[in-house]
Each structure stands twice: as structure tokens, then as C-alpha cells.
Length: 250
Image 1: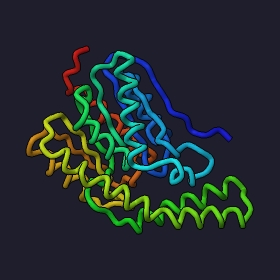
Image 2: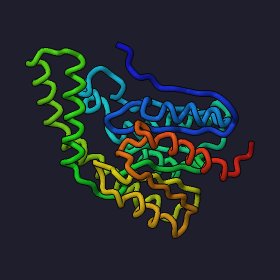
Image 3: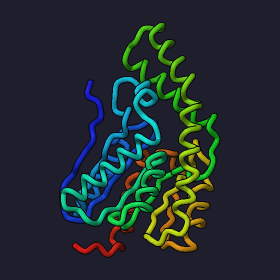
């Protein structure tokens, strides 16, 4: 079985860091990465700790919000060490939390944005249900025995609520930290988002626009993971156009 890998698409000096979703992998944003590379940007798509394995249990055994922030910081430092002094960071869903934190904390991160990111409270029950459903389907693809699948699903069911609470608690100070941002921000929201409140993107845009230049785009009929939908091409185009407005040195 070929498991999704991190990607590093090299091009010009301006760099873009793309961060994936809670239940996903860099494949969430790989196609977007290629499109941005064609526009001349070097694009890095790391794998969050615990993700990209054959067993979703690793998300809980290895991953945590603190670890995922370490992953994000390491990716930023990698780009800096490779000579990219101006970086834009975008994240889809969970990834957007760390994208915004990077925007607030790193001088080299000059712009960034979110794609359906829960920077306000969400219905954790709905998110947990969706995650468990996806894991059940994944184990089915692996053709595990019913007993083994049941054991793994029991573990996930026992830990998902705790993890979502940790993420929610981690998000609160990030929400406060980005107040007063002055760097350019791109916010994307799916109008048919089935996981989070469809007003969250607009709320975030309103929250940031008192101090930061905000570009807000919404996508009719798009689901939570826009990048895997027919609207994903338009999203990539919009982010590319947003990046064209940033005055990179090179």
C-alpha cells in the first residue's frame, strides 16, 4: 500500500507552506501545491505527526496540538534555512489553526490564510462522528478481521472526544493571538460545509478585518474539504491571485 507522503515542490524564492486537515494527509493540498508551483512558488506540504500511516490510531498515540505546532514550526524553519525569507502559510481545517499561529509568530511569514478552519467553537459531536465513519471505511479497505476492526474502532471512539477538546482548548489562545494582525489574510469558506458552522469564515474575516487586509471567498455547494471538491480548482486559483497581491522581495 502506498501511503501519502510529504511534498516539497521547488520553484522560486517566495515560498508557500500548505497544512492539511485533522483526518487527512498532504494529499489534501497536493494538487493545490502543484498549481502554486506552476505560478513560481516553492511549496512545502509536511505531514502532521501521527498522520499518513496505515492506522489512524497513530493520530492519538503520536499526535497532539503541541506536536502539530512543532511540525509547523519545523517546516517554516526548513524553508528559511533553504533560503526562503518570505513565506505564506495556508491551512485547511485543522491546518488553518497552525497557519494563523505561524502568521502571528514568525516575521518571515508575510501572509497566510485558512480554509474552513474552526477558529470559533464547533459541534465536536458532528466532527467526531465524521472522523469515526472515515476510519471505519479505511479499516474496511485494509480488509481487517471484524474483531480487529472493532478493537481499533473502540480505541478511536474512546479518544476522539478528548482530542477534539484538546484542539478546542489549543485554539482559544490562537484566536486571541491573531487579534490585531496586520499581515494579509485569505479566508475561504464552503457554503455547504457539513462539519462546521458555515458562518465561521465570515466571522473570522470580520474579526481580523479591523486591523488586517482580509480577502474573503466563499464557495457555493462546496463541502468541508474544498480541495477534494469541484470547487478546489477555483480555490487554488483564488489563492494564487491572492499571492499575486503580496509584495514579495523576489
